[in-house]
Length: 303
Image 1 (cartoon, rainbow, N blue to C red):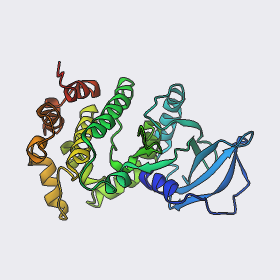
Image 2: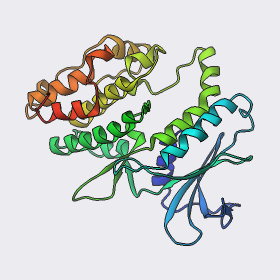
Image 3: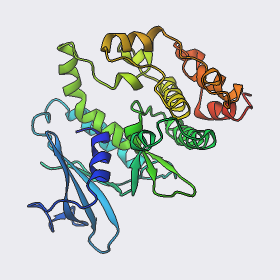
Image 4: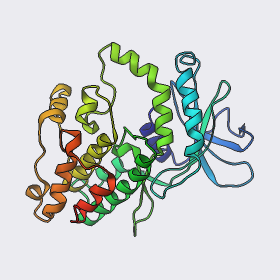
């Protein structure tokens, strides 16, 4: 059950389904209203505060199968999660609470009315208006700036991991909280290792950096590449790299340069086109050093 699945579950099930746990209490603070989605590694519930009506989303995780193998990683997450609860950002979905003890650990985070960026892009097949796409990029650059300042790499920036909030006048987006991303990485570490040994690819190739495609260490430069992929798709109305053949898609991520956006759409300023192209450099060190640097280039002030 991926985080993308979580948000699709949240948005595609406006009314949570009644379940055996409906009405029960989680952590003495939250009441479960209903089930949003169930998977092999846990359940996702819609709930609310016990002492109020504010909605929350509760993700429970089944660790029995992986408890022994992930003990060190879980300890690491508990230590880092304390810091993650101490700040907020307007473009990051907020983690509100967590408890990783016992047989049914859980994480609670804010409920966001809206749709995923994937759904939003599908509703705009020709691409977003340039001003809106650049606005979304600015918000993502700001969110990543905070994440990277704390020494954390998101690793999984893609349209299904971004929410577009319900506001037709001034659309705002929220990136899935990197604490939740880290948590999911912790839980899936053993699964990933098993799949890797079997020769299976872990990740979403259309939104993976070249270094991710070949299993090299991932740094903040990989997030910059992911932002470039998103920026290209939001403006062009199509992914930077496409192929139904997995190996061909991976080779495109590794070797192929995407076309300049100003050659695809005349209304795209060259500085925007070149900013996206630089973010998509195959060599991580040739990309922007930070989200702020990318944002400055998108504004025409490369610094």
